[in-house]
Amino acid sequence: MRWLHLATVIILAVATVIFALQNLEMVSIDFLSFGIRTPLAFLVAAVYLVGMATGGSFFALIRRSFAGARFGELGRLRR
Image 1 (cartoon, helix red, strand yellow):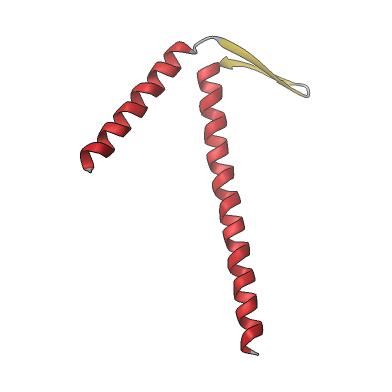
Image 2 (image 1 turned 90 degrees about the horizontal axis):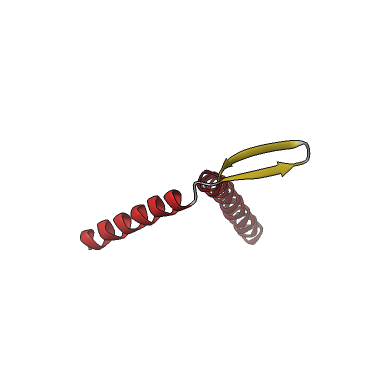
């Protein structure tokens, strides 16, 4: 199983390097009055990292909301 995990990580790392090397062209991003030019691979990586951070926070918020609702139901059942 360890070798399968290692092979998967190596394949994903190689695919990431190939993607970065094939997408070195500069792209322009404009939002309101803010504009930036950056390589496409960097933009994809940045959006992915922001999505990971906000997605994790969103799921933690939902999980906490469900736990709070469940705790509230248990408190009402005990009364």
